[in-house]
Structure formats: structure tokens, C-alpha cells
Length: 209
Image (cartoon, rainbow, N blue to C red; front, side, top):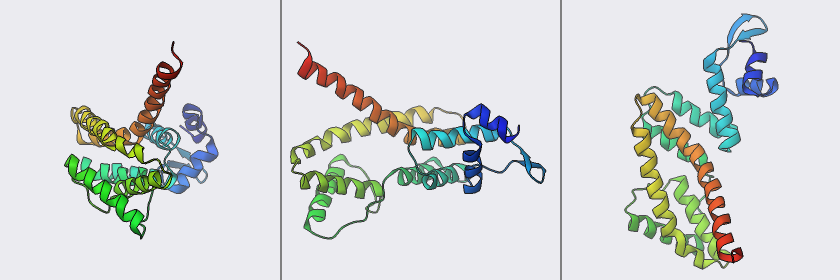
């Protein structure tokens, strides 16, 4: 198919497809002339993956490129691909100096130790959680920190359930793709479901007779 049909079948504008080609997210088509190329079902699938990550998952183009590269690496196992994905979807946080950061860091490390989670200190998610704790304290919302273990329990159960489902898939490539997309799209699903649950709980607690 030509780029016009690729655009029509995916709903992605031609300029956007060309941008993805320039950025290396979408592989080049097969040249049929100096300014014409043909695209196949693989390009169609790839474009859907890109849009899922950027539009639904909210990833930047740079993060999407990193995740796709991990998925494309034949020797990459699920753990390695998931590691790249987790780093890509987590906001970059630089460790700060001072007692406030140190106190927040101690609380996070105590939580991780209590849960028995093996986490490298340099992980972006750990630094992001430290910053979150520091921000909550700075805003005088310390009682919200009492919910961290509740969040951790829910996250633990979800992680185990996700990997169980993905582990049933046949083929390493399918498992890697499922793990990566589960991480990216799962974040969006959790956020949407949490807001729906909050709406229901709020109605029952404050509005229902």
C-alpha cells in the first residue's frame, strides 16, 4: 500500500507518518521510485503500536523510540525490555540535596524493605516516589502517606496478575510485546479505573441518601 492508504487505514495524517519515518519510529517502506514507497501490514501494525504508546499511553516520541528499540532487539528478554519500558514511562527526577529529600528517601526505602521489594537505588521510579513523598510533606498532606502501603499492595497484586497473564503467551516475542504494552497501557487503565472508582465511592459517601 502507498502512504495515502496507510494513512486512511490507520487514521494517522500523512505528515505525522512522515514525521515518524524521519524520527525512526516507523521503518522505511520499499522504494518503487525516487519519491514513492510501498508499505505492508508490518507498517500498519507498527503504526498502531506507535499511536497506542503516544496517544493512549502518553509517551513522548523519545520514550516511544526507546521502548520500540527494546521490543525490536532479538536478544532482549522480557526483564530487559520491561526495564527499558519502566524507565521510559517514569518521569526523570534528579536526586536533591538536603534533609527533606533524605527524610523522604528514608521513608521510601523503609517501605521497599517492608515489602521485600528488590529495587536498585538508581531506578527512576524510586526517585519519582521519593519526590512524591517530599511534595506531599511540603504541602502539609502527611496523612496521605498512610496510604502508601495500600498503594503498594494494589500494585503488587496487579504486577503479579499481569505477569501471570503474559506468561501464558506462546513465543518470547509475544510475551515481550504484551509485557511492554501492558506496562504502557496498564498505567492508563489504572488511572481511568481509579477515577471511576473514586466517582462511585464519592457518590455513595457524600451524595447517596
